[in-house]
Image (cartoon, rainbow over all chains, first blue to last red; front, side, top):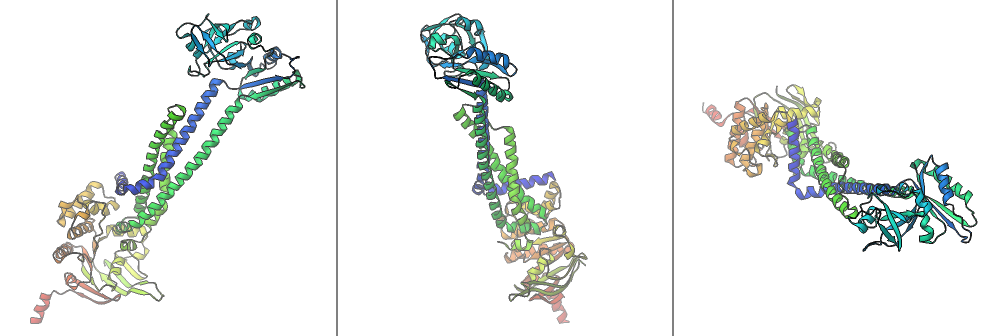
Length: 398
Length: 238
């Protein structure tokens, strides 16, 4: 039995290689379909992974609070009260709270400068809230806040760009001319590249008056335990803000840091759905192409079918012959499509995300099976038609 | 009786203006081991007759018993089985499959009988040797002359060791010398016990058979044993 199936496969292959150009053109639909599906799936998966990694580094479950006060002569600093509220009343759902003001400027140490770094004004919880981990030295402390210490903790790229192989701890850098003593260095978390998250330093927020010449802190980040607690945390902060701010002279916004991530996830999901639909249509068209060419083949080979039936071939044999041929044809198309999917994924992954993207094995196996199934599904009608030919009619065909 | 047909009719477009009665009430019996020629001009119904006898076509009316069993009652599956086991076909156009080589062509019917590959090849080679063309076993049919192709077709018909050989104008496309060789092979097959049914329009070829059935317009007009000319001459001289 196995030998016979092998022979059927061999005959199908021979009849396909007999007409190379035609077989290739027939495969093209399946080939493009499978190739496109694999590339799309891989690229979208890569995009998602890329994005997830980004948000993972950035830190998830953050609530951003921005306060704007119009009455400049009579401003109210809510910093201590807000931090106190989060620390005491929200301790069950919040990990921490920190002022979070971003500035740019020039950092200098010796002859080295760094113009690209972001300078954050935060408190001792800033690192926890923003996903930084201390590598060396110490983090900011409450005492630094109280004393308005001229200190900073620097990111890995700042350390590399300013100090090279020198140990930065205890050294003094300048930020726009203000001397700051480096007390700690954070682990690299974003590739230690210019303009990455490692290109950053944090200083005590209480330096705002001397360095920024602002009286109050306007931006805060609150890190929440889990994404399920986000709604709850936001509504509690909003009600606290509405109670503690004069609505006549001030405004506030409370933003869900996960919104952006969710939005881009939704975007890629709908993108992959649309592209997947297009790919399915291409596969369908490919299948119809196979059916079409198999019908032509049946007509062309009517005489052969007649001979085979005359010398004793059962219907099953004829059906199998044409089904195997259709399945081999589309399976081969699928195989080439998979190869193109691999190549395309690698190429696009490299060009667009600088990632080595390859199709997931599950998708590869699925598309191989799927392309064979398409061949069988669309080959069925021509095969049954072939097997139904009366031997005498088939023999009469030229 | 090997073959028995009663009042067999094959009518195309029955009841319409262009109605054709290819076979119009034929009765015929053929026994095991006979060598029968069915002779007629083109349009006499002889090819229709062979197609029906060979289970390639079905009659419109009438009865056909093969080995005593009505063919009408056979399923399509059983008919394929009969064609495979009982009947070996030889066609005027050889009807070899061009994509297969010579021995694969000969072995093909045995593939349908699920004969194992080694035995299939052995029997194919034996049959090819029997018709003296074994040296071309690996060639493609298109590389052979007409006579050689017909011998391959004969090998295919005899390799299954079926009790009936049906030959439709087997020499029609051959020159007289190779035609004579083919007829010689058929005679020796018959001598070994195979029933041979030879369809032809040529009286000279029909004369090689032991019994001649003449068809005109779908009816049998004569059915008699073939008496060789020499015997007839002897008879007249007495």
